[in-house]
Length: 96
Image (spheres, rainbow, N blue to C red):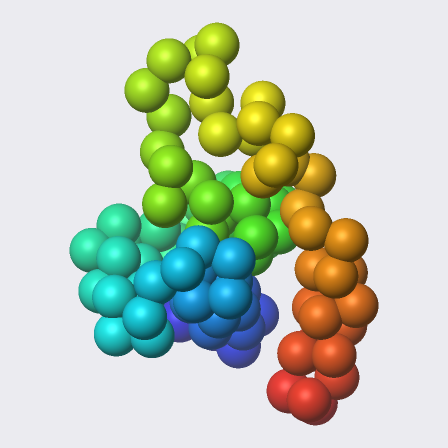
């Protein structure tokens, strides 16, 4: 896992805890079980990085069962909460 994917992986776990209500241990298990961050090709890598960690976190919590009720159609879940952008910038600054 390269550094950029690792950062996305870590931030998705943090989003699961902060916005998904999971414990840290539950979040790690959910992300690892998903296989989401195992990119074997550059196309897979770019697909992962194309979406925000918040998107992947909500995808892992709510999934997609019916196109009419996808989680991102819920105005309480999408767009991300107002504090997300500031929180994300803070998290990325701390990682440097």
